[in-house]
Length: 238
Image (cartoon, rainbow, N blue to C red; front, side, top):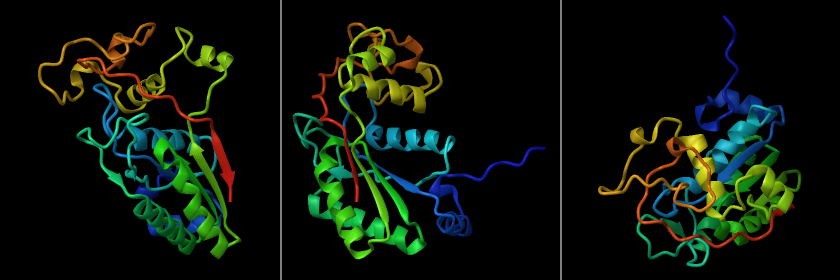
């Protein structure tokens, strides 16, 4: 019987395992997202579930602790996140969001971690993540904090073709493909349907040029509008 490797998910670890990881200088990465509407085809957990799953995949390739996700972000903008008027979106004011991240960084430092990644997936958070990292690094200059403000870079045409060979995707399609691949693996009939009376039109099939298998997409109706694009990638080491 092979020995099971220890979990790298912070929430599944015991306190001695966390203390040992901190003593070993293993980095801890915090997925930061939002609880925000993502059209008629994606759940409100999209912006914190995807970064957590990506970090979880990364932890299988390198020594990395996947920290507790932050499920709330700064207020949704109409041009990029749909706006605060859409039901389902739960947001924080800027001062609350900054204070929350500052407290999380302080607690990780208290636990002994010296290498911390703030991995953001919600566009509107971008202007507010660097501030708590700067405040904590001023108090504790021995800490190394990597801030990934925008996890959705402007892909080059060659990279777009390699990832989406069927077409150049709208900004929502990467999320659609990630969420269906990482979160739902069963047939579409086994997925929850939040609204009765939806048609059997699948989200990617109703998007021109998409060739996702129908069983990998969630039913939706009516078609959701395209979301605005994201800003260029932002990486900062504090």
